[in-house]
Image (cartoon, rainbow, N blue to C red; front, side, top):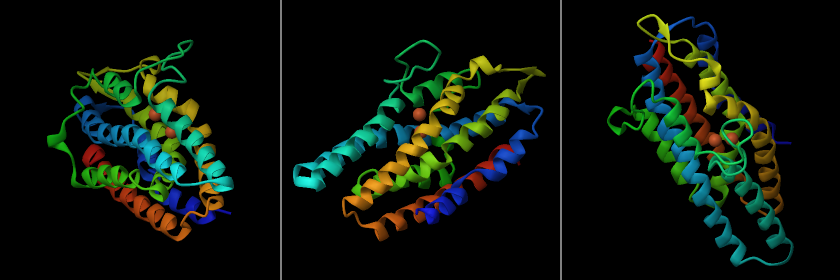
Length: 240
Ligand SMILES: [Fe+2]
Ligand SMILES: [Fe+2]
């Protein structure tokens, strides 16, 4: 039913980066820091944007009634489920724990060995554009669902390429990471399948609630093109 978005989702996916990261045996730690500096603002924009989006849905709920209201409440629950994962509330970063850090902080902690990732001065223009696009989309009703749709569809392939990239990081010919030190990545490898299904539900519910599907499609297209440009720039920035 939503095959157009799947195609957009594939366009937004870091396919080439995944291919190149899988071939990596070693990479200087500074280059992985280059990567991390560009991913931190994106994972942060997603974490905060998804939380702020709940308020957007509540505004819609307040002026709705009947079936429409029921559908909107379902949308609220799915969006909140994804958001609470990202805030570290439902599934912990390490086995057995029920609560972990906010995911962008988990990413920051994982990257501490590399250096400081929250470094706004080093952002590529493509990173700034993508970050701002995510922020803006989560400010509108159809935009938030488009953001979830694109991001959750590609989220698995994002952490999938991060795994070999971080495992290859080296300083003075010594590897910096083992798999068990890559909490952020391991956690997301587990939860992203579920998020993709949840985002699919959200699209169905948007349709059911009489949401503006052409506007939604435009948002999906827009965000997919932002991601496409971002991955291309990031590939050159990190791998040359
Ligand atoms: Fe997350
Ligand atoms: Fe996710």
